[in-house]
Every structure is written in structure tokens, then in C-alpha cells.
Image (cartoon, rainbow, N blue to C red):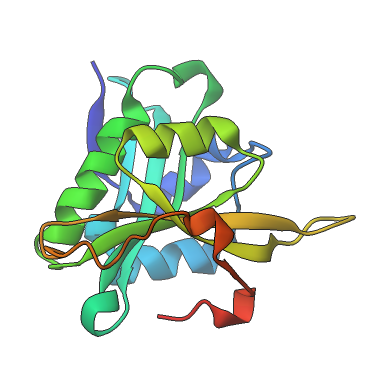
Length: 178
């Protein structure tokens, strides 16, 4: 049995096993702490009964008007705990919090175009590709495109936050603003 709880600053000393994954974006400590200070209810960790970290999700609320939404900045599960439904539970929590108390119109995230497993996972959760961000991820030898995937929340009654064939709607990174 595992437990889902809010991330604590001291978790930063124990999450390398989760974070050291080639598809997981890593940030400096001040970045994690700024999220923890500003959006503590959108930053959660899944733990074993012995309090070992299994997974985490980090998000924020951003935008204006009908672009007000929850954003998944990072979600990752340690290799030995994958395929247990942890990511789905953490995404459900982030979506619920984005809806209440934040009253967002949608939840969005960016995913590498090459990360087929993640794209399929998010699609099963109800996300769809809103647009392609050309060269969003900076690599050592080349940049990689990202899909901006979105899931409308109840507030978006007309589903204005999603579109058909979003993978064909290409923007540059500097055009992504909220």
C-alpha cells in the first residue's frame, strides 16, 4: 500500500532514483522550491509504507481568461514502480486540484514527440494534441519537437481549449505564452 502526499522540501534529498531518467526533465533546486512555495497543492509525491519515494508530479496554475489552466510541469515514476497506476492517480489529483480550487478551463502538458509511451498514456487519460512546438526540447546535437497536449475541464463547456489535428498546428517556442 502506498500513500500520496504533498511534496516536502526534504524530498529533494531523496528523489534522485525517480528523477534520473532520460525522459524526465530535471531542474535546479530553486526551481523545485519555487513550485513548492507557490503551488504546494499541485506538487505531490507517492511513497511506500517505509516512506521511500516512488513517483512525483509537479504542476502549476497559469494563464488569463479562458487560457487559465493547470499545467503539468513534470511527472515521473521510478522504474521499479512503473505500470502500477501511480501516474494515473497523480494525474487525477492534479486535474481535480486544477478544477477546484483553481477553476481552470483545462490541464496541459508538454511531451517529447518521440515519447510514444507517454503520448499513448496521456491520450488514454483524455488528453489530445493541441499543437506542436517546434524545437521545444534542446538536445546536445539537435532539438526535438514537443506536443502540447490538453484535456478540457468542466469549466470549458464548449471545449474551446482543444482542437482537431493539433499535431499539424506548428508554433515556435517563443509563441507559447499564457
